[in-house]
Length: 265
Length: 285
Image (cartoon, rainbow over the protein chains, first blue to last red):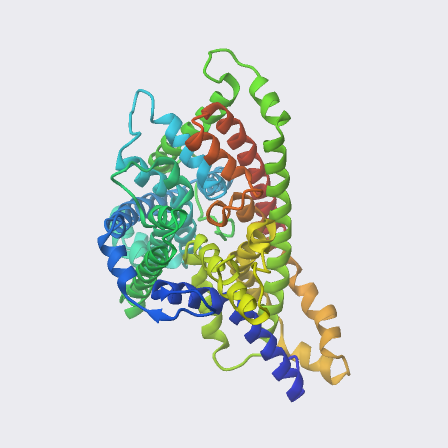
């Protein structure tokens, strides 16, 4: 306890409450309010309605939720496989190479997403591989952008793993693949789940690379929100934003409640 | 990102064939990330012809639009990161050292902000501070004004404020971890010896927080230099940053060569900041 006086404590809590309220509470509340606002010509909306949600699900961007979830699942699934593969196999390398490659795997998270989108656009609009205008190029962009985060999460999990488990399994004659499947992976399952959740969330909100690449038939939620607000349909945009936030948080909470074998042991 | 801390498993000096298993992820990354980036660099040098030249760079660097975008990008990133450090330090200080019931849950809720898209805050700000937002409508009603009195949102300040909101959790995370390592007894002894809270913050807490502040601050710089969604959604005419300029050139004007030149500059800036972040992270561990 840093502040002992009652008034000092009350004062610092008031500061915290004010900051948190204005900086985090108010924006969330306003999006929620706008998504149900019928008429909004005064300080607060004069009537409430659910029509924006109906439009968000039914209207021009009704497909966006499905597109975003599919993109997110495919990209995070691929990123999980690649990130875990990279983190696991990196352990067999000498320290020098390991350090270098560790940096290489993190670089996609440091490059602006718009540039990643531009690169894919330039690279796959020409032979040998033409992907421009397909949904695959959007999924690939998301995969590249989130792969660093999955890699980081899984390698953090592996770093915290006591080496004894694998050594004991090896000394008992467990073959590498068996050891991986029955010892290492179950032990890092919580990190795999967290990695999947985080990368799914990042994919759901990805905008920079997607606006560079999306074909007309593959509009994700963030692109839909931008199109709506850009043409002035701000309340429908707010409703779609609420759907995005709710889906993301539901997936994150759901994943955090999954029972894992590591936890039950 | 604490990967360098892995204790190397005891291994023989001879070549380990297991090391080859690293090849598939490296090849995937090369095909979908490094090859496209390489093509951006190539096109920035050749344009649509076959000969190498720096002419495109010269033309871009001479343009007013690019110079303004570069200055805006750096200025906004510096201001937003400073704001994140100030807000993050204040909040982490109160959450750690003047704890109240629910402080832990609250810091986890702020943490989930990291998972939400950045443009969400920009959109929310238009409802609060926009020309037809809550604040302006209230003030106009209250003071009988004809025009909205608050218009900072459509300037660099709007972008900075939105970025501070979004990226403060990235500073709070390492700060809360650093604060949890400070012995509470140390603070209690200092208090019993007569040190006031400000002095304790200055002499005990702040020095312990410097590594976390440096790491969090450099991460904020990197993320704010790369930020796209907030700038796009606020859509102020005078506020154009490098990522937005890349998008404008490529998608609105189909001028891919110029877009590639700007993207190279932007990537160089980001990778420089990323190296700084990694350096601070390993130095200060």
